Length: 148
Image 1 (tube, one colour):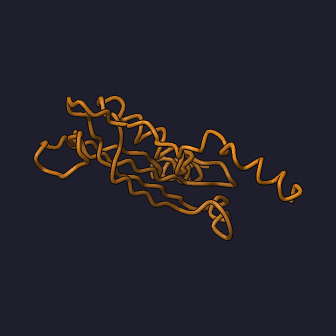
Image 2: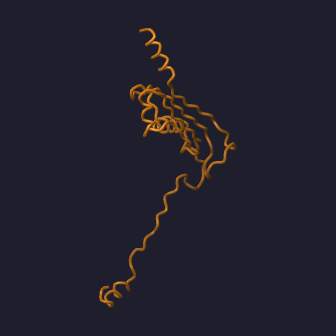
Image 3: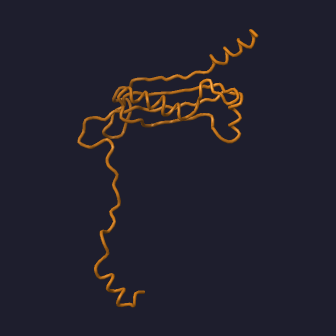
């Protein structure tokens, strides 16, 4: 009984999540016009799975949306750039890793803030304009040709 408890404790302690944030100097990186770098963020999750029960549950959604994006918002960032992610795939033969194995997910990105400027950070989309109507001569030419 003691050995089983020891094994469970070791497995639970070997699974973790971590979030690292490093503040960046504005002149350190080249970012899109109208922005300046705020911080580099790295989110990592290592989960142990036993019969599809994750300790902790580890997937891309958790790392990208719950950890990386949330940390950027807390810092006051307007968006993330240069986002890179990697992890154990969910489908195919990799699904078997949920039975008894470790799964990992990791994402990194640069949080940026908008500099005061006249130009909006997220400009509205440009839509292709469609002609308002056909020329008035088009219906007349059809009637003259017999409607063909």
